[in-house]
Image 1 (cartoon, chains in turn cyan, orange):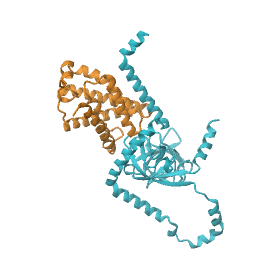
Image 2 (cartoon, each protein chain N blue to C red):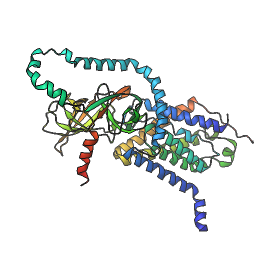
Image 3 (tube, chains in turn cyan, purple):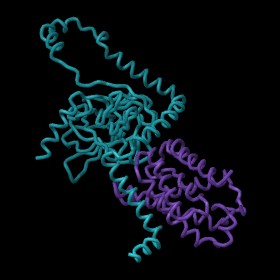
Image 4 (spheres, rainbow over the protein chains, first blue to last red):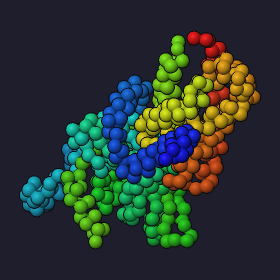
Length: 282
Length: 176
């Protein structure tokens, strides 16, 4: 017994070194998998508060750019107003069919919640955004996030007033996407090299891809609504060993100056996820 | 200003500069990340024991991790250099004269050559360990080699600039 104490006393430094290393590695592995370390929420409120102050300061420098983006988005949305389309004849043809069924039968699936970006990294290998909108304001884990010009990421953690978003610029990020031209689906990932380019993997070689093709979110995603802008094809590489293309995608979102984003709530998200997972357990 | 107060202010300054200035710089290349924050650990006083040194390094790394969202990654690297620091110091400087008469490592207290060796080695070890941990999660061997060399180079340049800008006067230890 005495020898054990002597041993511990002699190597106290080395033992404490090992202990601290083990603690950090455990923190690292658990947090990157589940994003729920046991005191992360409390500290997120502290860093969130600091980040929010800093971003209000910074937002003044990008005001004109933010303005331009919002004005562009406004113009795009205004162009989609039904008042802009004059189609007196077609409405008469469809009138009997659609009015009743649409007003009664259709229901809302997605709700868009605006949120301010108070923290954003793009220099690391695993990047996150912080939003000043949390569980009390209706943001929950798994919700999709889009910016004014394209999709941004997925919410991975939310405290009362702050939420944390896994950016598309994250090694583990995976979003289902498709080519606008012929709806060929693939998955959007990031290889960690350049924050303005993503990779679209698993696109079948039968798809007729050309440079400049638009890539949208696919209809298979459980959190993203379909047909949201992701980016445009910048380069095409055919993998000789497999039947798939790997496409380099220029992101539509400019990750360097994000100020405001929309969090998208899917009303049937939990239902869909439950059904998807129920098959896996068997 | 007492050493304790000075180091507390430094703690906040280093984290602030790293999070709000260096991490905001648009990336030039995948391999290049400007890290400066760990200089705080190299600047800690001689008089600290090895255990308090590691504890401070752990909390310093962890508080930086909270901002970047990579829990424990930088903390592990900081603990690593805090553990190695005393070995290196005892190798590089004559213990009796320097540690008794100066408060903390600097160019003027250690001399040009030993100080740059001390900074260079610890910077390399820090990045080596940091990128190794990243590499175990993802990435290839080329990524590992490239990032270690590029990041070490950028960090050394930043440290050099910092030393030039804020020349710390060698403080003699007084008998109080």
